[in-house]
Length: 463
Image 1 (spheres, rainbow, N blue to C red):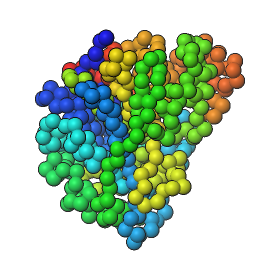
Image 2 (cartoon, rainbow, N blue to C red):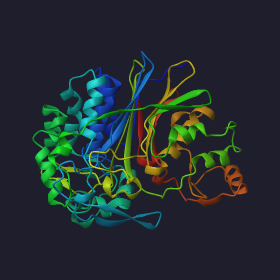
Image 3 (cartoon, helix red, strand yellow):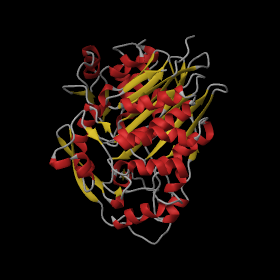
Image 4 (cartoon, rainbow, N blue to C red):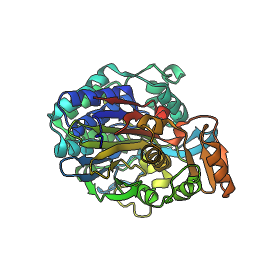
């Protein structure tokens, strides 16, 4: 059976090109994914950054082993000497309706991205760490062009992103950046150079740890030295479910993506499957926007590395002179659970995954942005590739539907027969007038191509 070609899929051309160049230099899938995520932290700062958190899934071709790493944000407070002040409420408009989020220093949880990328590289990287960081540092020196799709996200999230110091970066002169205009973060190259030279520890016990603590506390947050020093990357259990004879491997996420795949109807032919798929996707959560991005990489040996990262909306708290916006995850109401004690890892919808073919080889490496729609986007993409016989670009680009309580939200172009089948079985239908970034942002490399999601300005490049 056909093997997966080496390639990179991401949500920005500069991110994808960075990953491909690292593969061309002899890097592994891990090297390329880490380098590409660092490029995300320069080129995709409306979605992610060094001040955020994430997850990685790695497939080792020689053994067939799948490993999931959790480097999501942790709850601060281990120092016990600081109570957070009130957060700052902002209204973010999405679909014409306001949604209230909370930002500011009290929304900042302990970042995990530097530690997580360091651990992925330590386990599976081949190239020296400074060589993996160098491309992102180069991008930080010049800035990058903002894709039109990212500009649309910026417009929705401007109350959070263009808050405080972010105003000068995202809304210079009072005008939001537009597509194909330069996005540049002064000082970010300095931070990347320090990361290359000193390693991830620079943010936890090194030169920037005190800067991070002082900045967050001055803004009303609670992060202390012990929170940073005690942060560790976790290896997390890997679950799997079967779709059309393929095994889908991923972590247990907040939306139970693997369980959802296992609950799909036996008959997956269209249009009759639509009600059963909707039932499996039933999500009683709220419609939240969520700023997240994903990188999927396969190397020439068939190893795969998928990394999903996020800032939330961004706290609007910037490390001085370093161009780094910190996460706002403690302001994401749907992620706040009763067990959030200091040091505890927060929950997340993120679900980087790999699909193993019946022959034991890799079939697809994929992940998605989109908060509570991540599961929707991934399930629909896998149905397209594994069941409907579509190429990866076709499966990612086609219209999707997302379920919230008794309502199906359908992108423009969803098959009328499927919508009719849903309506006949009692679902309320809301038809959107366009393909919209609300419905997620998949990036995937598979046996039938590589692609980023057009909803997020994504691209796929083969080696």
